[in-house]
Length: 124
Image (cartoon, rainbow, N blue to C red; front, side, top):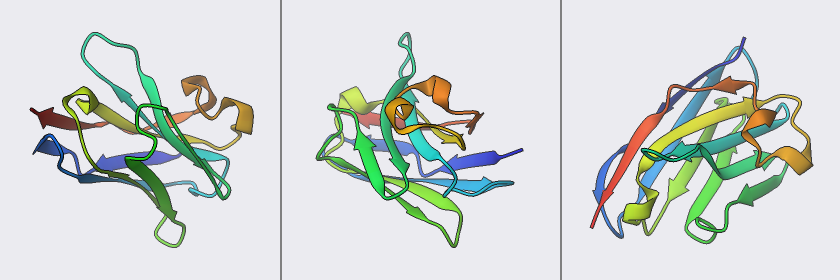
């Protein structure tokens, strides 16, 4: 059973940066894909970023502003978020998909394990 714990969320102003962390236990961040998703009030959960092997994936809305990385030794995944905008306000979830295939890394259904989420609020 993989357990994921996110941290690093908070309240920031537009243009600021935040770094989210996800600590995994009971499994490895090198297995399959690790992803970040977000859910704003009244909206469906949406893909933000993922890393599978040495390849990173981003949604169009965050490409160029967000960077995903991982520290295999620490079994952690990070999401560096720059130039934050009010539209980035959401609860951000870390997810693990040990058997996720490349064509499905953007699909929440490819991930078996989820963290509890961390709130990111961007004020204008």
